[in-house]
Length: 115
Image 1: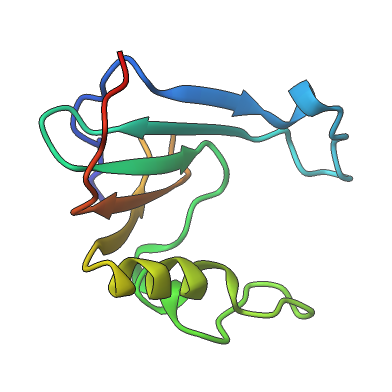
Image 2: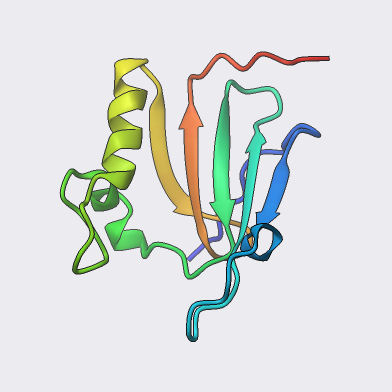
């Protein structure tokens, strides 16, 4: 399986490790780094992590209302993201990040550069 690399980002990408905000490691779960950035030369942004990722055969269904990987999950998370995107004529794609985790790409968004 090919690892998806988002197009080169602008210098505006931000990384966040959960330990930075006082989150504690939960049991055997390692700390997670999340990267948010814009695509260079394209309208949109991505949110990528270095977690366990989303299997390729589940990437479309994780956007469905009611889909949850947790027994007590609501199944609203990514479904809400897709609903917001649809309302604005954006597209949402679930891929694999360069680090092997999940990458959520939102395209068609007018990105305003502040200088």
